[in-house]
Length: 308
Image (cartoon, rainbow, N blue to C red; front, side):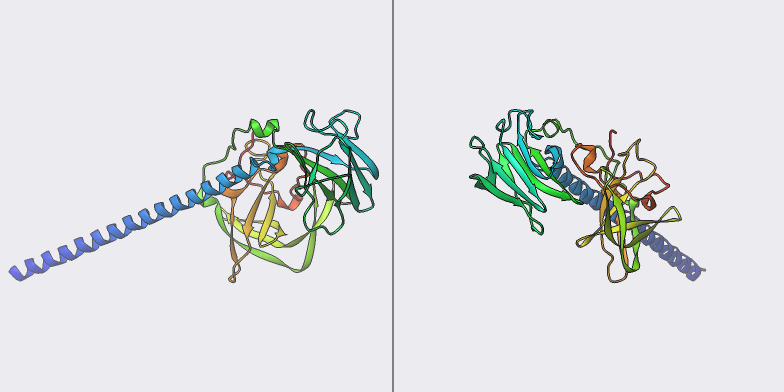
C-alpha cells in the first residue's frame, strides 16, 4: 500500500509538473506573440512617420503649387496675370521670363529683373532645362519657389513647388486605421510567361503602357484575390481600389509598395502600408488610377484614410 501511495504521489507530481510546463510554454508563446505584434506595430508607426515627414518636405506633395502645360514656342511666366504661366503672387517678378519648347527641348530665358538659379547656379540669360534622356530634371529656384520641367506622354509641363504653400503650413497630419497585423498577408507573384505591359490611365485621362511582371495572389478569409503589379525598381507597385473608397478612404483608390518574392516565390502584401495618392492633397498631381482588374470586392480596413 505504501508503495502504491508513493507511486501515485510521484505520478501526480509528474502530471502537475507537465501541466505547469505546458502552461509556462503557452504563456511564453502568448508573450512572444505579443512582443512580435508590438514590434510590428512599432515598425509600421515608424514607416508612417517617414511618410508624414516626406509629405511635409519643401518639395513634398503638400508644397506642390502648380502644374502648367507648355505649348510649342514661347511660354511667358511670372506673377503677373498677363503671362501664359502665372506663378503665385508676390513670389517672383511680374515678368520673370519664358520657357521655349522646341521639339523635345525646353529652354529657359529670363528677364533682367529675375534672379533664378539652375541646379544651384545663377542663370544669366538662357539655359537648356530639359532634353530627351536627361537622368535628372534640372531644378530651378527663386525664393520659396522651386520648379522643374516634366514630360507626360508627349506633353511637357512645368511642375512648381512653394515652400510657403497654404496646404503645407496648415497640414494637420494623416488619419489611418489602427495597425492590424492580420492585414499583412502572405502572397505569391504569378509571373507573366512573357514580358507584358498593361494600360494605366491617370487623372488627366492620359493612358500609358506600363511593364507588369505579373499578378500578386493572396487570400483574405478563405477567398483568393489577385492584383496586377507594376515594376518599380527592387519593389512591386500596386494601384488598387476596394469598397472603402469614397467613404473611409480616398475615392480613386490607394497605392502600396511591396517586396518582390524571395527564392521560394513567397512575398508579403502589407495593407497597413496602403497610402493615399497625392491627388488627395493637391490638384497638381498626375495620379495613376487603379486598372479595372485591381478593384477588390472587399473592404480593406487598413492603411491610410481620407476625409474625401
